[in-house]
Image (cartoon, rainbow, N blue to C red):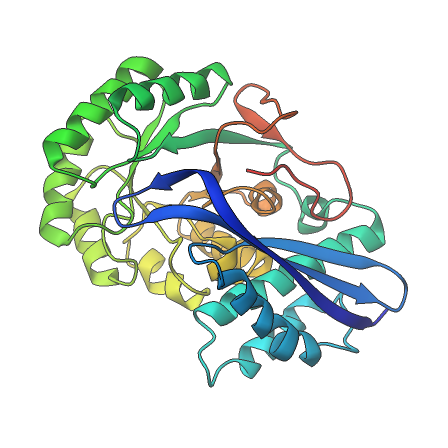
Length: 346
């Protein structure tokens, strides 16, 4: 089987309900959809969310259609790691980290989808499953919500059966964070996990100050307290705090995780499919973390659930409120049963 074509479709439209974290407003739904065709009539597809600017999906599509896609025509689509290396070498001069990684990830996911469809099995079976259901929490506590809105959406998440919830912090003074955390805790109860996410908003001193308070409020983890690339800061912070530091969604490729994990700068590793390089890199990052005894929780859901099923150190899949037709079983997402990357839209 050989690759015969790589094509891309894009959409970009305003969000019906824009959401805000400590550093940005997310007000668009941009999607880049990659399709890889073969000479045996089997195709694989991937869907990449890429949108704060209207033109963003088209920019990513240009890289895939003009640079990455042509380079893999004629290749065997089952040689996924070989294609990854080929594309990393191709993009090295311009910088593989960054937008190139989004394109490589989109191709990587489409290749796994294609391989699963060629064998008529879901990808999690190809990766070697550790489990058949993934514990899930709801990321619903956005900063544009007032306290009453935060309480309502947290209550809805618990009604839908989620194990716990995550909320944004750092959009205002610490006293505001405390008020909002206490409001959510009152809604979800004393035992449900409550995670907080600062989206890289703080410097070291402020992250330490707030982290000590989040510990006292029994938060399960403190996510992205510092700029993503500050490995030394993460190590120092982890040494001072008992609350686990969760991070990784804004790091590109396996190499960016090696020192962070080995030096103890992360308590919950959280790669993002798009930035890390796709299912292949996320699986390998997760296995590296497992070797150091560090748990793994996805940034986002969707196709990531196949990696989560295969890792020994998985603790959670992240989701928004449940899409229509999806139900949790004992707080867990069941794995998709269709071939390839068929999955829920988290």
